[in-house]
Image 1 (tube, helix red, strand yellow):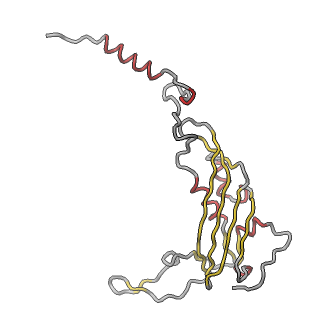
Image 2: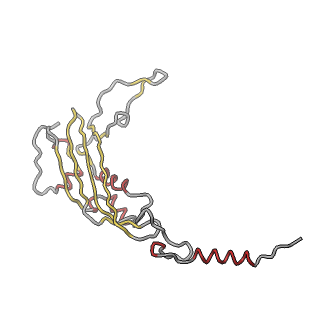
Length: 203
């Protein structure tokens, strides 16, 4: 842990520091950072746009707080933006606010813990996941994918412009939110006419 103050060169964009934390540049009192970034700064989100899943129409507001817990680093992050989605019922585009956050504990070195024993009395080595830690042994902690994942998880599996959206007519394709197309009535009348012409054998 480095107790020196955090000094960023003037040419280092805040968005780069926000997504890449250098272990050696975190002061004892911790740090906070916030920035509005472009979707191009997060590759996973750019891929979503390229696939036509959505369009991000505002800068992505990202922030983080990091503080030491002994030799571990507790990092909390928040991210939000507005996106344009296509309704899964009527296909109309609509705006959706997305936001999410995370709380993770990073370890540059895994703490030494006595091996536990399983039911058969044999030693079991605990992993970082078992300890609730994210193992980050290098010089930096990369947060690009973690921030992007929060927005991806915030995307609805079946986007709806409105909970009461009536969708499209399966027969003629008309947007039923704009009014009844009449197909259902025609189908009923056709079936009724067929029954009316049906001749039953009388004994």
